Image (cartoon, rainbow, N blue to C red; front, side, top):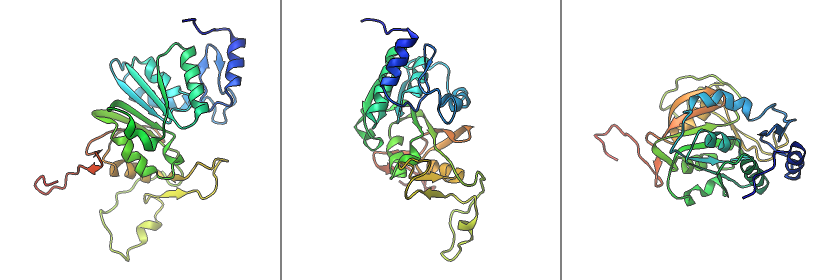
Length: 257
């Protein structure tokens, strides 16, 4: 097979032909999104998350949900993951991801698939990346419940979501009386902001949680939060996770399920 060119002029032309990039990836000195409004994105975020994951992923299988241009898939493959599968619904992003990995001579699989269709992917994975997707979904909690099924029992979920509202955390009671409404007025109460029309010129921004809601949603899907390496990112283990459509919960009732 002929090796990809490393000629800067040729790469720049090929990058431009693939349309606007959201992931800024360095292809032999050619940045794919040099004018990104968030700076060197997503590297500016990854540099805070990278240390929370093993440097050596030899033998690991990785699922990158909403892989976009492939930045995270590339980083996981560079750490030696045996298999990396990236999925996205946008064919433009998938074309960019295939091009980037081909240029970098990395073997990564890409499929056009919705997060709601992850059940159709065979098996489970050691690492599941669910980054920058949650708030773009009309049915985010349903999607998260499906995602959790793809994590191996000793695996990890890397979850990232845009946050808005309060960053405060507060201990809340497990239950409140019907007429007790005060907690809902507290800025630290778990809340998700619904965007009816558009936010940041993006009509796919549907539900944006505050920090308390993001963590509550993770726990409600049976996940245990292990680390919070970056303001919008959590590392989780499946714990008492959703399996085969059923919650496996410790009810503290003599082990009854």
